[in-house]
Length: 233
Ligand code: URA
Image (tube, rainbow, N blue to C red):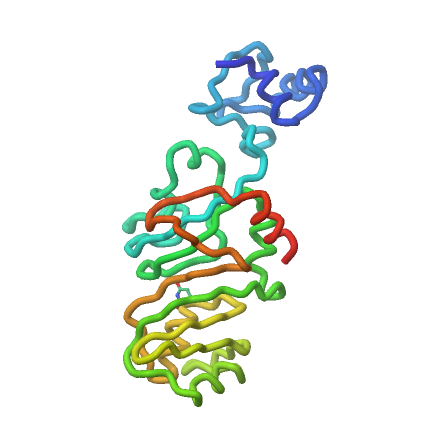
């Protein structure tokens, strides 16, 4: 437990006297209830402290990578399905992390989370064209004609136009696909449009980051170097 005013100062909200004014103005809530007492004791590991509705934490920006297993939807909540948020250890659930983009329920592999809204929007912006690399198992075998069609930019059955993408055949029933956008079920639909329906999909890389030996279902924080890599995109 620590004093609320100290916690607010440690989060960079302001000096002790500024914090006093902010508290007096009723801008701070503890577990949703306005709190004006600067000597109030709080436990930031259990309680949610917010300023003007923004939840505060001592950690500042956090970026983590999950090796997503199949069976979880990419959403912050869902009435029916299990969500990727359930895979975050409790100490991370309090940090207001949001998934960066989306992997389908059945898709496995690299999924980033961050509490930095600006970084999140940059990474999912179609303008940024962040490359994402997938490993797919599918029916049939990709040909050089398929490679060319991907490189030219596919048009899907419903008229959706895809940006040029890279298809690397890995032998019968296996391919690697690199796309720079994130349309709904994109890789599955792209391969299906070439009569290569997908039975398994895994994201291996995003923006130069790779899963490495992170076990399925586990998370790890990015290194400073990895965060820099994302910043430079
Ligand atoms: N493309 C897909 O079809 N599914 C994913 O989960 C990601 C990319």
